[in-house]
Length: 553
Ligand SMILES: Nc1nc2c(c(=O)[nH]1)N[C@H]1C(S)=C(S)[C@@H](COP(=O)(O)O)O[C@H]1N2
Ligand SMILES: [Mo]
Image 1 (cartoon, rainbow, N blue to C red):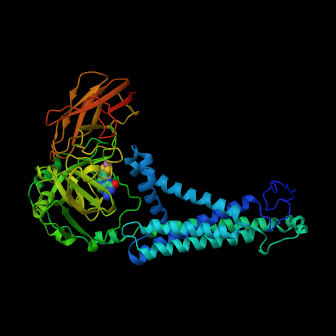
Image 2: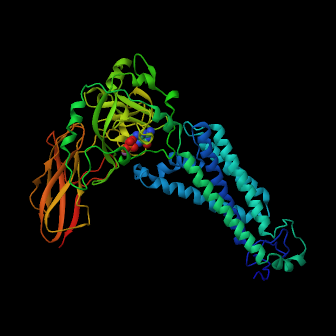
Image 3: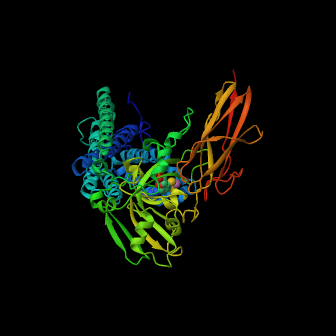
């Protein structure tokens, strides 16, 4: 099966290592076997690192993931500038792709190392050492990461990868691992690398790969328990004082229940998530504080317990992402509990020249919005609760900003650590140098939830339903139009607040054929959504959501 002739220039066609004279300086191993060895070894190294990182979470309460950390580093350095301006929706689908991409790159590099390492073992040691260092460096850069855990995970990953590569190459060479140097052995070699060797190599390589998969899966499962999760489950939110919001929440009873319509309040589990963090910041509220500084008369810091002891309100606010396309799902409505930003600013005493309020996150992300948005009477909170629970970790535990009527990227800092008063000239928030508008009020929008685009409905009465939002202004009316016909007003749910979306529904008597349904909303300033379209960049999409359906028996 391995009966081959040596090509003096390119080596053995099946890929064994020979020098230009045809004399092997080490045991010839087929190229494909070397590549497989390197690939499997790299996979095992990554998996062991993820496993140890997961174990770290059990021991210290805070996990480590080298792959995730490298991804975070990539997003903040290379990925963002490259991907702008399509980027913001990275949260929805490209994170798993990025993780998969990093793993694939590791495997490919491993295969390359396997190819060269048979002759140059120090290359393998260098490569695995460098990969370990890079992983450790990235992991240590993540907020809240235990440094010792990062180092152990990286060292364990590098050592197990390096060791398994050597081990697999020895097995591939026919077990002994002793270099075979005489030309005679070359002809004997095919006999040595018998069917037994082949079975043994492939079997052990497969087993190693399997161990890697199990270790990676176990690491992932262990990662689940984070310090923040544990601390969050112990948080008891105080009751909100019955200042502005509570009566509004009482109106939830007016919900429209047409099947497929978005509920008035989006459950936490269904709430969209957008952020630049591949690894969620793991904030222990016991070590956390919120600092108010910059152009204030009395800068101060407060602990989480101090924040919880301040007077709190509950407000229903629709939060929208600037990257939400017309008809998209990067929008949701929640009952936010928190301390009015105005109260915190009053305590600090904002100086006259302050123009911009910068909200800084523990992960380095920043927003910036006009100081007036915090003081003009709109809902603007340092929020600690979401739909009756402490903020979910993914939505910013332990505290975040929520400002009605401003897109999330300029206002809604999650894992908030600092509120800084400054000027517009002095600072650009995270997305501004990446091509997005400095000021970004949420555009009045409406969405058709049912019927969905491309579906078929039966002739007769068909409910057309959805939601419309114009946070901090309020929705006045919603109209629907079919096939360029007249605009027909829809029935609306009672407003929970001017900041919350309203559901709408209209029953249409469908007749067979194709139909185009469009929707537009008018807000309480009298502004009606223009036809657009306008893309999401640089300051939010505009246009009438349109669905095309078939009416058929
Ligand atoms: N720390 C941090 N906070 C952030 C972001 C981020 O990338 N990092 N993204 C913002 C954006 S663009 C939006 S739309 C909202 C989304 O909040 P959600 O994930 O709770 O829906 O969070 C904002 N807060
Ligand atoms: Mo966003």
